[in-house]
Length: 295
Length: 257
Image (cartoon, chains in turn blue, red):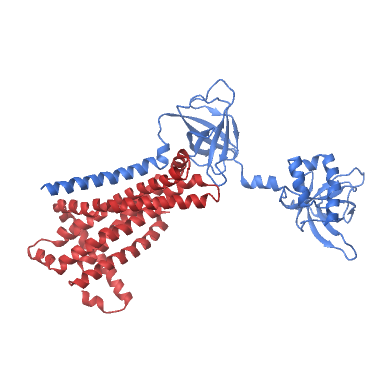
């Protein structure tokens, strides 16, 4: 009888241990651990784009979890996402002019809502709204902003061709964009070496809509960002006559070598500056020729 | 029955085995209500296959978690993602390693002894003697062992998983210096109670419990009544259980994921 009792107790202990382990796994190591931690209040915020944000994603202040995303829905009739945040009552002193931003944890991590405090004396309360939001950064958008190349504009209205000679086209390929003030207005049609010449002969197909380009404009081969694709930038001149089909652009500027580009990147910071600052342009104009000579 | 199965090719023989196993499950399930009268026997078997397996399950769980923590830390540090170690340890253990390794260990530790015990009863005519005394051996011997296996395996799996997470924590946090808060908060942010715990730990281990226990008692019950037959049946329990566990794991995963 005593032996029978001992295994009965042992079996009971085993069953209890098993269920305790299961309960521990289910409640302490899963998302269940994050929900239902005391009272919370909800606030609403509107985002232009929520990216990969999901319900139950964390809401963080200074990296500390203060709540979670309760629901995500579309604002009726608007291209806007309504995100309801459920914030723990313990954190009741968040200023009502705080900024909600959708961040990504690490390079591959999940997205979460980060709150950056404002300076208002009033605190967020149940049913309140966060007025200032910043949408999720889409990787594609970021890349295209960084690399800038983009695609050529569609040429529904037909194109006209202009040509130019370049000492060095770098990695320019047919199909690359032609841009005016950063706006794609056409594409590179061909890059060849003409018989009897030693420089590259580039044909640009420009949309007929953009027929107001002065004929003394300069064409330059630029690289979008540090390692982006190359494109042809048109820098308008001051002539009263406009470019026509078959014209040749006399003023050309060759591709920058990567070495120069890195130097410029480190010094001037933003690669976008070069298109607006005439001084930088003048400075750049001299550089590529000297580096081209070295090669 | 055994003479009929010895004829024919490997395919016919395996098909006959599977078919006989399926029929055996039906008769066994029919005997389960009757076995409730022998609740004490089920409890004793639960002690033997469950509680006595705890040592091996806990040790193995600890080491599996530890080696996972070590390997994942090493690989994830290439991508600068060591903070995800806890998450990946937990998900890998809950979804795959916990149920599968526990079931394999269970087949080796408890399944073999079930087969050998029932097989020896068959070889020494104890089962026939029971039938003579109007005691249904299915209800008194086989069903309690089967029930005990089905109940014990999910519980053992839960213990294995808990030990695995503890092992991963031991290596990741205590030895390799991942931040304790990061380890847990990343885990709780990603691990889902339905997808990982219910589908992984509970459902899979329950299915494995049925399959392993069924194969073990079936091999024991249908063993040729010789000492060689018992030895062969014990080997077959391990082989068939392992194949069944791994194949069923794939099938279940493809349905559950």
